[in-house]
Length: 398
View 1 (tube, rainbow, N blue to C red):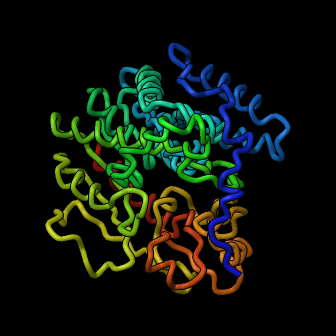
View 2: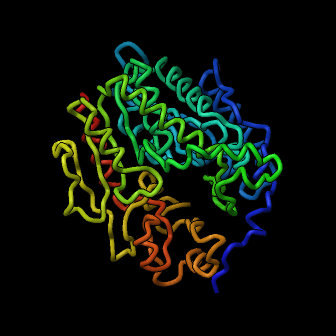
């Protein structure tokens, strides 16, 4: 049976919706990167002490670094030739960047991965965080990376992609970008998200877009309005910067045409105006017979994202950076993304979580939701091919 409007649950704030007192501001400035990782990991252990699977939670949410092996990765002026800074998305964690990190390390890159302020602890820590603190984290990571490598590259997922573009427009050391599901434009209603401050002191529930169960080990499911407002402000700042400065470094971007979180059209427009001839866009689509009109064909690779034999209707915003083999989010993973049904349709929510026969996967578009019980896809069936395309792009930089 369907249960609509479970306002009793929705109105109830729990400990995770309160501020932890940790990680609301970036505190790594001036630290060596390994010390930043050590202190941040210790902070995460304090916050998650006593939680089930605490060590797994801490390990997945902590920033990290990887070193390439071999003489080919040595730089002419510094220890390494190339390095890449990885930045996760809004409500996400460095866990999402691990498979990419392994790819980059295997291809000779020194890797550093950030934890953005407000993340990795509890959703309540996004109540007051400011986008400027996210930018400070990316600037810090870029500085630490530049100390060790001749060529600095930035790679970001969703909000992390927007932050990477922002840094590149302000920093001449950045030699190229890797953008995954870039959040360049979001729902314009987010502009007004922080109006809740006028009354949420009296009604704390009003400070939240969504209050969910938060059963996801490496990603918040609940979302404060402030986080949406900060993300909207970031995209507006980025639009202004892009009007003032040209994007002239090589850019490799991946987007899903069916993305309901970030605008694929905004990515197309961004990539059409990126000047460097090595620029490349992989566009995941369930209809490869309809390429976007007016986009330079030499920059575009259409990738089929529908696999009917697997029950996959399309790709999704959440699906680009993780492989099918991922133990938590992959094809046989522990986690099922069914929160779009909670709490409005408990019957479908439970069927989705149980993985009953006939459950589909894809982006949570209106058309896909009408097709049957739908899990939001969390992994990329084309991940192996994605690595081939990234390698081709990297080789073009030589």
